[in-house]
Image 1 (cartoon, rainbow, N blue to C red):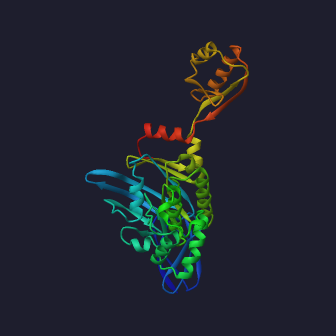
Image 2 (image 1 turned 90 degrees about the horizontal axis):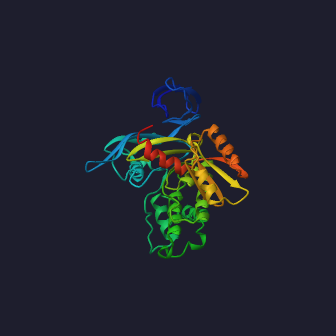
Image 3 (image 1 turned 180 degrees about the vertical axis):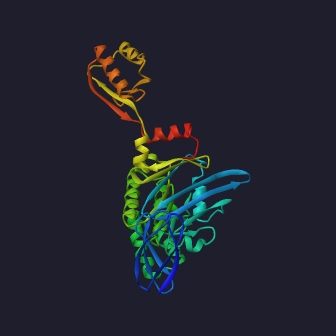
Length: 364
């Protein structure tokens, strides 16, 4: 009989369990009720959580630079197989967070863990299964992709056959197979970004930490990277993704954290965030062309905040209330205007982003 003390991956409660070598047992954390499956081995216990398992955990992380607080007591987690979008303006603290997670910076206070290992205290072990792309990727313009990836493969202690096989595989994923033996000095910005992603995934990491991975890519390249990340997610890879491209975050991520001034402003799943976005626009199409008099009459309606033409449709900004929408439609028809279509629209993610940056400015 073996007795082991294990740590709950969710709340960190220490739990004592007993079993025989090779035996698997199910246990519930007495504190948070999360269930886990534990397999006893001779020297150590293997923990595989059945429920939510936080692969990345950040607790009260703060970073100061010469008296300037770049990161202010932030806490969050990323679950296994989740894609988390980390969004904020320049200077919000996104890259600082990523550098702390990858041990390129030391925190002023607080802690960050990857697979329950504190990054700052045991970086080699914590980052063993992590692939990263941070700020401007380190591309050596005098090397070919094959030469550069071979170098990094050796750093990851991969053997020659494995390196050659993985190089073919990752270059195919990032659409650079035809460039394997060409000097990278002639590569475009987008191609360099693709190669940096290939470098990050070369050793088949369980965790990806990516800082603006699609900068410099054309729309097709962005879609290719999005599809690639979703494919990794389907295989259980956990992804922490920093980006300015809000639409891409919406299409790619399971959850979003909005950061500003070193603080978390708000966060939630894509569904939660989108449910908080209010209806504030009516799109209207008229049968006949509006005269200047018609336009001025519409603009003067008390219920209408603005009235503009965009892509052949007229857009009315209003307070979002159903009764107001009905009132506007009634007024338009009373003016003798023939309405072909009349539909309400939610504000987009960009509008929500701007509003919370301007209005909330706090931790949620």
